[in-house]
Amino acid sequence: MGYDMYLVRSPEGEDEAHERASRSFDAAADYRDRLDLPFEHPAYQAAQREVARAYDAMEATRTTHFYLTTWSMSECRAVMDHFGMLTATQPPARPTPETYGTTLQESVAAQAGDAAPAGVLRYRKALEERLAEAPPKPVGIAAHKLGGDEGWTVTPGEILAALAAYESGRTANPALLSEVIEDADWWPEWIDYLKHAASHGGFRTYGPPVA
View 1 (cartoon, rainbow, N blue to C red):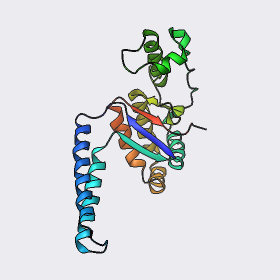
View 2: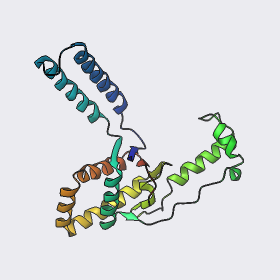
View 3: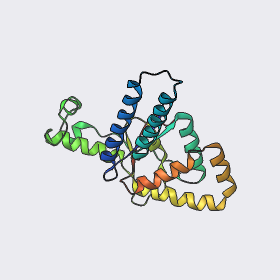
View 4: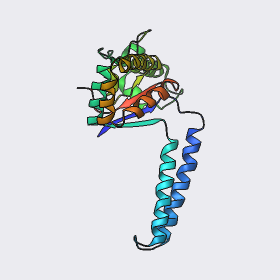
């Protein structure tokens, strides 16, 4: 179990590139399997290297997703908090469907898209706004958004504020940053992902709730 982060908006052309790379990977794996050779055979080993290369190429096309284990996310929160990248705020209250002229049963049963009843559409919009709620001038990422299975949306404004705090903090304490990178080799990739997400609508988080 861990935490999955997804960009709100995929980079242009990424889905198509991933589909092409997926087909190349499938073709490489199919060719390897059709060889019907023992694992130790040089031809099989060469085909396996091609499968591995195709897999890496496929994974490289998917920049929308970032994954951290439960332990790594706990480390991530601790480091981000140390650098002043997080804010401790209470999650906003969940809206009630009756407020928007619908019921929970109707909202669950209604089809997706704009064809749903007006009350359901208003309720769904309220739910989305709650998940993305942030102050007009964020000073960091709301800590509760880095957990839970609802899909909290970390906004570009929150990300940029967190990155600004990080730049200030790492300049003041470069020795600590070196220790962080040594213990958590995923940290530079996480910072790159935050920068990437800031220009693609932010990201949504899915995982265990924040304790």
